Image (cartoon, rainbow, N blue to C red; front, side, top):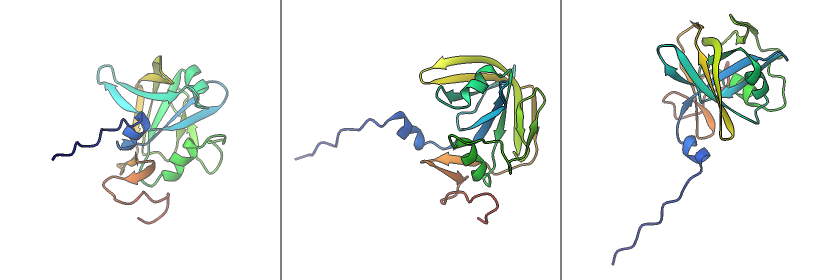
Length: 175
């Protein structure tokens, strides 16, 4: 006698994407009320010609108003030692741009994180409402690779190093 396999469960979208590793970036903007920013794993290249990237941001994000009104935004790829920076920009209800964070304006005016290994900035080409998020398309106008780095990844609710079985160490810690 054969036994039927259990019925498949339907995981939530959050559960599905927790199983998918994503590179961690910080998106920053200044829509006129001061610098704002958030941690994102949704950054992706979109087009080579013209050079475009895309990211999404929740409608409820405290950074959405700045992204919605900014002419230019910046995307900063983080390295595996920058978990503290990722957590800072993921936290709610804090001023993310206070010391010890080092930042300065980039070409186009978006706030730039001085310690990010890769920085990309450009004007916002499109903003689309998409469910409970907004999809933002940016034309790359300026970019700088400051150093080759090991990327910081987000997977299963935590920050990790590429290929590492253990979560990434906090900035300045030995691994």
